[in-house]
Length: 226
Length: 377
Image (cartoon, rainbow over all chains, first blue to last red; front, side, top):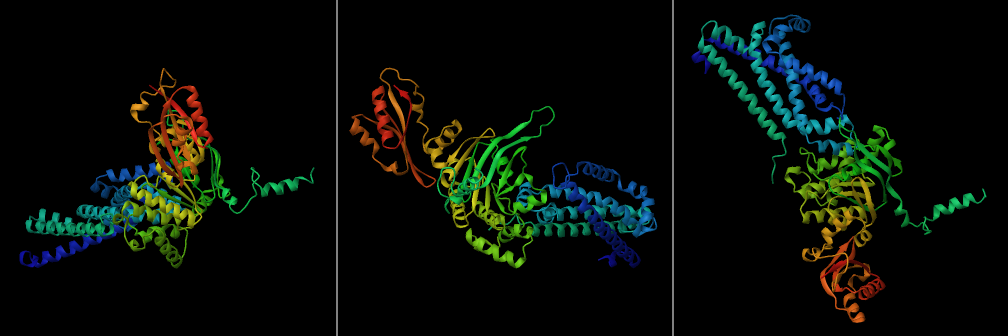
């Protein structure tokens, strides 16, 4: 479709930008989940009287999460440049851009996972306790499996949000679709490039959302009827 | 003196306080669950007084029995049953289950103990993403039982509760009664000695309730399982419980054999629960006119309770014939309580002292219970 509308050089740029976006979103999504999932489980189970009751730590982590969540992403990118340099060895480029994306994704995912876990019926936790389950067993055998459809939807939302965030990392030379759209579509007055970028982003979001919805539906056994 | 003591001790082991020799049947009288002076107060929020959920509760659940605790909502039933498996901890007193003081256990010890105490719930609490089979397997997975052993245990349990054909169905595909059957199978998976039933039939329709209660009776008899159940429905007590404790305002106000409690309720709460199902409540037009003392030519209203073997005796015609008294039946009902026939007849008859006394004597002489409710004119 594109070769007929766009010059081959631009198509190459578009493919490269798509590859960069997918790479950044995938890595940031994975690391963000690796941090956000346990953090979210902890936030959902550590208030007073809960499985891993630690109200003070819960509040402290909640504050950190809120602080990270309330910082506009573009500010976050710039504000944590020293940290980015520490982790990635550089503050510019695609790999460097993964650091702020991850820092933004992890607390977001943590809050989504927390909400998903809190949706699990407390009666199930009580039943598991009555069976003699340990707190870790309750998380592994009851909370996570029962929340899995909701967690799937939460991660889908996180990936879609990351696709949006990734458009801003052009500010630190991160590349990707957003960067291509700004530099070629906007600064070089190439509306066809801008349109192509938007179309690719729409297709990506649609694909991610449809896949997430389908998966969540397959995992959810509550909608079954005989 | 010291030489006699061992003998006394030995004879004390062989006979219970009533002097009956300890036989195999009598070992079933040993309490499996014992509440000793148990109190539970909930921590107050600022500015509000402490809330006492339970006060000085003493209750014994004999081995192999089905004991029911009945109370209105807020009476403390939920707290009481959760103390048995340590889901709640008492503020005072102790709870001994199968010889173990539950209140003295560490968290780890408590988890071990819970594996020999099954529990079923009003809202079933099945995992939506596990099939019937997988739900029943859950407590075994938690206990670390090997996969092959789990299969060997779960399948007979699904057979026992009549759900072998629903093995791979998810809870959303099952009816309420089927879900509770899965709940019962799950509670039995670790082969507990005790089953706790937390309003297990309260979310079910009457017919399904009867099926689930029949299943509880079956597991009680076949698996020698001791059952403690809480309910707000006297019909549940009547159907399955050998013994009943009435909980009111956090205290046990009455406790005894179900049949005795039904035949001779003493506390107002008990009477209210019983009258709701045995027809012991008077018809409104009689109740409204009932006076405690006799005025003029008023008729006496008597409640006669037929129990056990007398439930089918032709008592009224005998009284009429022997005493020459005209007896008017206001209400009559024959019921079945904990497997024993139980009849209540409310009658009115001439209210003079001599007649009432003669009838009372005659009825008591026939081995029935009688109570003067009042007088109507």
